[in-house]
Amino acid sequence: MAYSNLAREVFQQEVNNLREAGLFKEERHIHAPQDAEIEVEFPAGSSLKRVINMCANNYLGLSNNPEVIGAAKDGLNQYGYGMSSVRFICGTQNIHRELEKRLTEFLGTEDTLLFPSCMDANAGVFEAILNDQDVMIADRLVHASIVDGMRLCNAMRDTFKHSDMGHLEEKLQDHQDKRYRIIITDGVFSMDGDLARLDEIVELAEKYDSMVFVDDSHASGFIGKTGRGTHEHCGVLGKIDLITTTLGKALGGASGGCVSGRTELVELCRQRARPYLFSNAVAPMIITGALKVFELISGSTERRDKLEENTIYWRRLLTEVGFDLKKGESPIVPVMLYNAKLAQDMARDLYAEGIYAIGFFFPVVPRGQARIRTQLSAAHEKHHLDKALEAFVKVGKKFDILGKSKKEIIAKYGM
Ligand SMILES: *Cc1c(COP(=O)(O)O)cnc(C)c1O
View 1 (cartoon, rainbow, N blue to C red):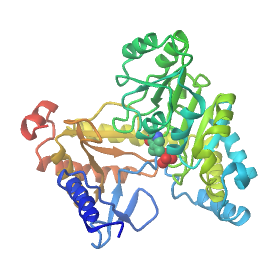
View 2: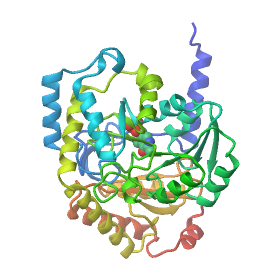
View 3: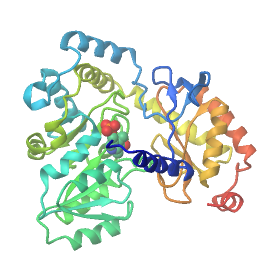
View 4: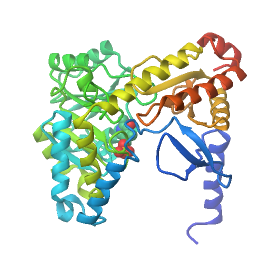
């Protein structure tokens, strides 16, 4: 027997170790479409509980939008269920190219290539473009999929301290001998919700002859006046050489990602990026759904404006009652607790009060930086946020952290 009892025991022990280290991840089964309120079965086997959802990436509230669903159904009827092919064999329909043009227009770039996901876009993009004469200089907090994409590329890898422009400048100076330099960053960082300083990054790139890469997955559709992303917010539309983003968050939330940017770089991805060449084309109904998403968000900024209002409102409510927040302007609002157990205990009690938010702690965030991350959506109404606040206040009182500084929380609970 190839899979011996010993092997079974060894691997089971590894799973057990995760559990003991508090790193075991449990799925929560949702018996409803994604929305501001959802029905959750948790733990598995328990009865359904209706909760306010504060942890989805459903920023624009489009994941369960009737018009998007209608467009997806039309796509299903007109273009079939799936492509059963990668793009370059027989998996490209007219609508795939149409969506790429729409993305190009929206992101203010030159061309766009769809991928099965943004994870795949990041996995393929660097290897397709760079070689061992080049260097990739990444912010230390970039998304895991970028880290993986960099590993797959044989260009030299380097990093700069998170959002530290002085450190980035030093690195750019260090690498002037390389053929090409590329600065790599997220637009909005998912754990802290802070924005990359793209205006300064572009300036440094111009000074030191470097390309700029931005993963705008947590920004596309809602950051910037018309929601084009972090580059719009920072006033550098058209100056980012490569953008990757996802259709799996604000832009409908189904799946799919893209590489968008300079014509030649996108063409190299079309020729060489392995996840594009070797993974199935995005399903037609997702393409027609996404085309509807762009119709909706290009016609009006109502949704991103409501999201912004909700974000300001929620930040104000939490601040007024004395929670310690990470400062920022994105709809990612981290409530800082510092201690891992406190974050877990509070998330559990919030859930009992009907609020679904997740505690994050090491290794997802640095040690001593545990928090509950809340995320706003345009699907939230004021009454959702008011009710969520009530629960936060009740639980905050129980643990006696309201009005307490970082120092005081750490003194009471440890890091
Ligand atoms: C969510 C996310 C991804 C992955 O997107 P998928 O399309 O779900 O693979 C990539 N990068 C960043 C920054 C993300 O937040």
